[in-house]
Length: 91
Image (cartoon, rainbow, N blue to C red; front, side, top):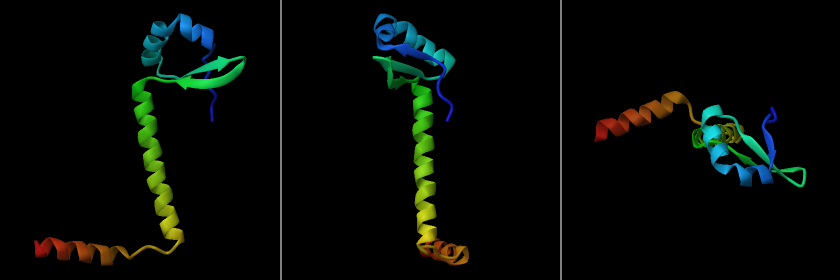
């Protein structure tokens, strides 16, 4: 994973909070905040955060599907389609 190129100490965040928030939206790249020389937090704009959350949700769904396949918890497509057609017809 590529490390963010923007790294600032927490003192910079305290002194420039409004400027940082504005820049986050413009640049759409995260800002790593350090404390005592160690990375402690990551700030990102809300659109990037939401995109990340959606991506994580999709990855979780894919991982669940893979686990179900490995466990043999699958049914042939033809059987599923037939069952769906029956439901639709019964309505």
